[in-house]
Structures are given as structure tokens and as C-alpha cells.
Amino acid sequence: MEQRSLTTKQFLELSGHKVYLRKLDMEHMEAYWTTLKESSIESMVFTGTQQIFNRTDIEGSFENVSKDASRIDFLIFAQERDELVGEVVISDMDRINRSAGLRIAINDKDNFSRGFGTEALILALNYGFGMYNLHRIELEVLAFNDRAIHTYEKVGFKREGIRRDASYYNHQYQDLITMSILEDEFWERHVKEPVLSI
Image 1 (cartoon, rainbow, N blue to C red):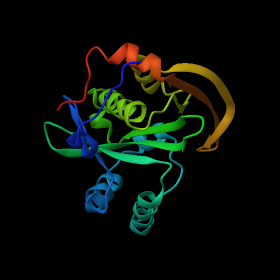
Image 2 (image 1 turned 180 degrees about the vertical axis):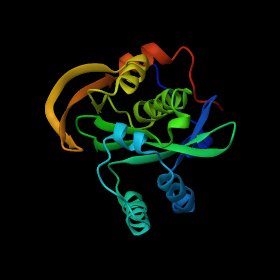
Image 3 (image 1 turned 90 degrees about the vertical axis):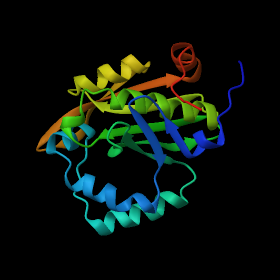
């Protein structure tokens, strides 16, 4: 397979047409906290969030993330408004098996269906496969979240199976669908028009 490299600028910030990603850092704590407080209930339901966070929780989380070599957290900013709109995280990186998990959240329903999530996913996957030499990246999605499933499949994720009644939310059990994408599948679909810019 052809070797691909990223520039120093791309290591610090990943830029697309609609969004750019920045690695999570304490300098973003205030903006992150404000965005989280203003997140819609609908966006929290779709991401499976079941916990209510306070500012102390977020500060502790920021500190822990900076020390965890098995993950990389990116904040998603809208290019046009230079505004924080969500996050995408590559987590549980297993260097031996070259695999990892992924999760993404767009924090406000007003930012749904604008292509932010799709482009952020492509940028993050490009980074995971290109910079960390991962082979497989997987995620889980609530079975009723058709919008997210459509986005994941558009990017190239494939359904692998269902974890029945794996999530309990608002007095109801929900199925989780496991999906994954392999490096060759990603490069075949996206390398022709790379999203990362120099």
C-alpha cells in the first residue's frame, strides 16, 4: 500500500471544507463546557449519554484525557462560524491488533444534517489510519438512530451485528448496532479526494 504522510500543521489541526478538528486541550475547556450545557436533550439521547456532567467532571475529564495514550480526542469546529459544534474521539487503541473504537457527537440539533459529522468522521478516520497505522475502527450506535447509521454507512462503515437490549435509557432497553470500517475500505473510498488540506 502507498505510504501517506501528514504535515506538521495537519498534526495539530485537521482541516476540511465545512469543519476543522483540534486536539482537545485545556484552552478549550470553557468553550466545551458552554457547548455541553447548551446541548439539546435530543442530541444527548442520540449519543446514548446517560450521565449529567458538572464543571468539575469536565475539568477532571480534560486532565485524564491528556494522560491517556490509548485515545485521541478532537473538538469539531464549524469553519464558517469558527464555532465549537461537537467532538469526535478515537479511543481504546490497541496497537498490537491495530484496532480502536470511535464515537462522535454533534452537540446541538441545529447543527444536525449539515455535513459536519460526515466530514469530521472522514478527518478523524484519515488521522487514525494514517497517523496511528490502525487497521480497524469500530463504533456502536443505537438501533433507532437512523440518521447516524446512514452517515456511518455513507462514510464506509459496515454493520457487524446487534447487541440486544445493551443500552438502558428512560426506562427502556435499546439495541446497539456494532459497525466497523477497515483501512483498505476507507482508502478505497476516500483517498481519491483527500479531505485533509496543506
